[in-house]
Length: 183
Image 1 (cartoon, rainbow, N blue to C red):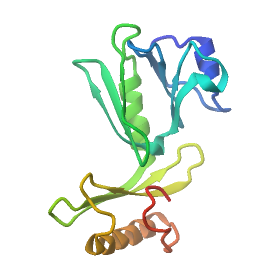
Image 2: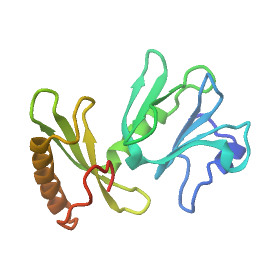
Image 3: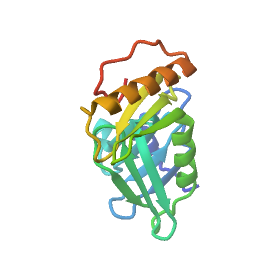
Image 4: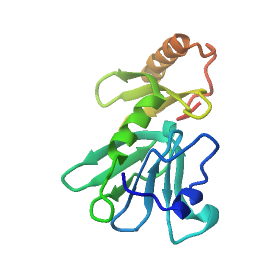
């Protein structure tokens, strides 16, 4: 594993009991991509204090990610808001264990998932995710790229899946307000 400099680890503001599982430096920006047990942190080693953290998101916020071994690029897209990001972890430090640790942490945050597909591009994923720090469960309703949130048939199907998944993990049966990407 590439050696993460102490100032970078300090800038990550790790909580008690948290450590860097893997880290690598982006070839283009020099930012350090850090995988911790509870969150993904990207640190700009040229900045100081809180502004040094370019990205600081819990694993339950990661919608998808991927590692391209041919280009050395790690990509991530987020639940809800936020543009997808990519880091090239090739020549400065190499990727180290970042791709494996990234995948393991995202998978650890997923408790249950079910897709709803009514055809004609009407797709939704309902996911129960765990905050890896607090162990609190969160429900996410993720609309497909061309899916409209106001489709009544889809809304009924999603409500049923939400009830089933909530029951399976012991969440209360009442449903949070519709339209939320994370409850």
